[in-house]
Length: 113
Picture 1 (tube, rainbow, N blue to C red):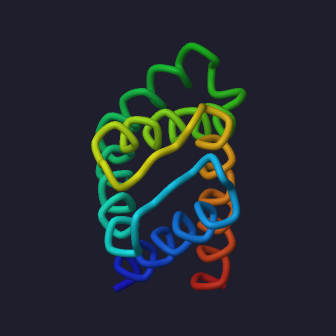
Picture 2: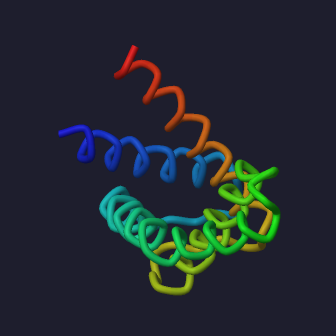
Picture 3: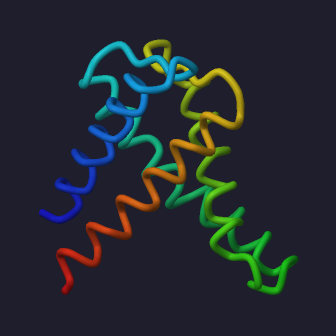
């Protein structure tokens, strides 16, 4: 149940950030849900491998920054996979990754605490 709530909230974040930032375009909320699913799946597979490799290289000292950068790369990859989702540039993808990370951390603290 928490996974579905997280998924819907991430889709809402993508939808709202796309509304606020002109560099991010999304067709509708259904596409936002599909993008959130793909970002979650890519983060759990490819992202996990990238984070592991980069954290070994940096000795885990900047793991939060590595996580944000990998998530931004995953968002750009999702941009290439969907026609109804477009992120123009790396910086908007990084902003979206930051907003998703902050909201995810806040939700985790609310649901656990």
